[in-house]
Length: 305
Length: 286
Image (cartoon, rainbow over all chains, first blue to last red; front, side, top):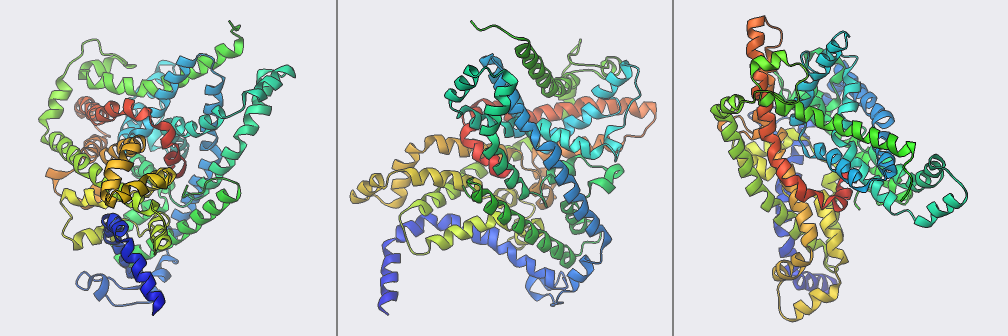
């Protein structure tokens, strides 16, 4: 009784702080936690009349359908394939870019370059995809250039062989400059003494980069790598949604695209698509927790700063 | 004066090539947007039209969709950004205050939304339940508290010495007063950062709108751009007559891209000052 009283008094004393948080918390309840009740449909047979609460339960039946669906497994496989490729091919680009900018002796030129490199990050994928389509189309700049050089034109956007590499290239075109900022920040924190010492030891530029600059970047690189594990199941939806077309469907249908197709396609089955969404959310959550724990273990800030 | 070496020149040239790689697609788009159909067909590597014309822009603006799209997007920014700021900053300030019962629980509940969400369908059903679909409020309200900006703001608020707020409290100032007249003026750089990033986010909004809004008179610019671009993609395999018409489309298409990009270009110089603070966003939002 006494404890309840004390708690009550504490709450009352801090009522102004609760008042401060109220608008944000109300929003969270309505628009973040409220919709989660929709996930119940994963265990129900959806009927428009019954809605979320009135539809009859069906146990794990929806999941049974999901795990029997070949398209589902194909989309999971495609997602992992594309994202592991991103780790190998796309991930190093910002690091190389930062190292390159770091070697630039003309400070104003470096600044100009950095400004230009960061700009595309702030454009939506709708815009970037339009630019990409324009540049790579059959009568676009690149193909005209190929033709002028006497080479054969390439159907870049309709080729399922080229689609995934184009994803890596366009993602770097859009965001490598932005991602390089974190490495550049780490570089600017390197002690000048280390460079002086390297100079005294007679190290050339290449050796200095390899033995002074790169080791200093290592902690940042590792933390970023671990954090990107959190995106293994998601990531790239905006990009792929805007760049894909029927010709490349077999290589472009990642899990999120598949969920979009079954949810808003011609014969939507809400229970079925909720079951996939729930699966995706759980796996994604797991990846994020692993990434967070890993990053903290390595001395990084983790997902939550 | 240091001697300029071969490596310096090499670095200079590589960076130059990368700059071209970024800039040329934009230049090409701008050139096409000002070009005539005939020039587009003749001048294959077009970076600057010889006889610039405003025809494409005239045709584009003749299309009612682009005007309503621009208006809708502007409205989403003007209503959405203050809402984002208000909800995110007040919550960040509240949770940065001294210990109060339930603090851990509330923090956990906020951060959990970053780890786990139901996806677009449950949100759509919620919007339908609240009778918000087909109104721009569905798009505005779909993003309220932004957890990334919440973390940035909270980190800053936590670093403000408690003595400052305590003395204000002794003077009888309420929490809202403290937030608006003491904390926010101190946190100007953070508020500016969050505001600018919110503006860009809101302007670039397309997916929620694509799902929530069917009414053509209130779709935002990005969705309009998408449909303009898709239109000409559909008529891809065609005869020469139609090809000519499609190429003309190309000018309008690129004009639409430029019109949609322009506001971001205007905000960008201001954004740049806040990059270092935005690093964290970049790190976790990737």
